[in-house]
Amino acid sequence: KVKITVDNDEMTLDFEGSSPQVRGAINSVYPFTASAAWACVRSVLDSNIPNNAGYFRPIKVLTPKRSIVDCDPPSPVAARGLAGFRIADTVLGALAQITPDLVPASGGSAPDAGVSLGGYFPDGKPFVYLEFLVGSWGGGPWRDGMDACTGIIVNYSNTPVELLESEQPLLVERYGFIEDTGGAGEYRGGLALTRHLRFLADEAVIQVRSDRRDIPPYGLEGGATGSPSDVRIRRAGGEIEQQPSKFLTSLHRGDVIELKLASGGGYGDALNRDPQRVLNDVYEEKISIEHAATAYGVVIKGTPAMIDDEATQKLRADRRKL
Image (tube, rainbow, N blue to C red; front, side):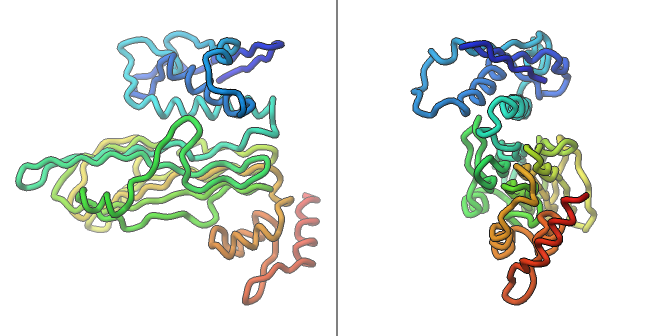
């Protein structure tokens, strides 16, 4: 939780009410919390201001001690990044109430799925795979959410499939976007990213630290929430094991880890989205014709697909009466 107070030329971000520190390794230390908060405030300031210590001085960050945003030893902090991304989402959500024309909806753009895998080849040589997958942005006041782009408080990039497969005992079976997943809005949220990895060695330990399972990224100004994350293991024998958002388990030859990141939330009323943008999304296979009608009130028919203007106007008018 955060409360932001603007008082003349000063700003206070007060995290009072945030949860106590926990036994799991998702606690944040004060410098990390303050850094994430400052980055969010920086994102709504004039971009012509050069980065310097001066503009940080009027921005005060207050945190309750022994909390998830300001933990004390021996509290574990190895996965504090997950807390940091939620801190940023919370600060941006509060800033959206101050500057709604500058802040986008929440996204799955931070590395909300950290995958660690390690084991040994038969000759005793070890292998270690570590990657933080980045998802998509939320829709903003003037644009759709970017697909698969690192968030504002981090600077990550993906591991190319060719590099991963040449150096790790992994086969990438699927890597792409999932249709109809972006939060609906006048400006659509970015799509959910998915990656399926088949394990090719004998045995390994895998750890996944993901987030946005129970509470998906929020929309703004009437936009819909994004879709939640999901992690499954498809065993070599065909069994599907639904996994919690954070877990540690073993993989064996032929097992497939199926990762789905959360998508971005939408910004604004979906019934105000330009029908041509909806049609373009259909052409690009980002949304289906059915989703165009149910989420945006845009009727698309024919081959090639075209907008039925009369049916669209009627459907949107009917929806607005509800």
